[in-house]
Image 1 (cartoon, one colour):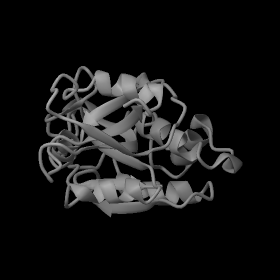
Image 2 (cartoon, one colour):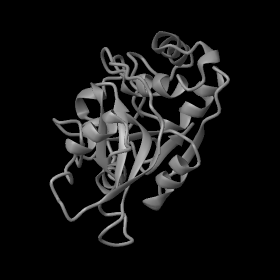
Image 3 (cartoon, helix red, strand yellow):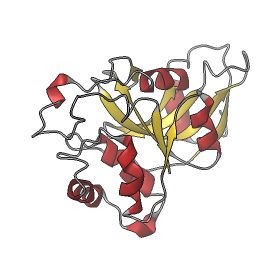
Length: 218
């Protein structure tokens, strides 16, 4: 930990595994990214803007991305309930994005280790960490770092991903397993969000094909 950036140390110290002295971690990959706070239901667009900050020549601001997404009928207030549209949205700003199916927990790790950052939909708990609400608390984060637990076993049960999202200015260190499980149970939008005039939600409210088991690598 002595060689870790200070924000990574602070994120780890806030994580669910930090008090377990039997666990030891290696910082495998990390890309510092300035935080952007969201206004309204713009978590996906804000996460995308943070990712696009790695490509400073594209002039992609939260407002520009929002306006383009609205023009393409992908959003109404800034919400993004369909991961499949994000590669085309990125293409409008000359940024390449690849839609991935998250079938194995290591899929996200491999993308991070290949110098990508990843937009991941999940259910956000009150503390913004992953939870299991069937998609009713759907939120987006940007994963841009990886802490590998190296002491106990070769499994990924205690690994952490370093993340930013639009509801906090601080770097987070979330359980990779919790994030994987949260992403895999995104099956329906909150009934409160199914008013077609307020939010761009799949007609039947199902997120099974639009968010569940999906993430975006940029």
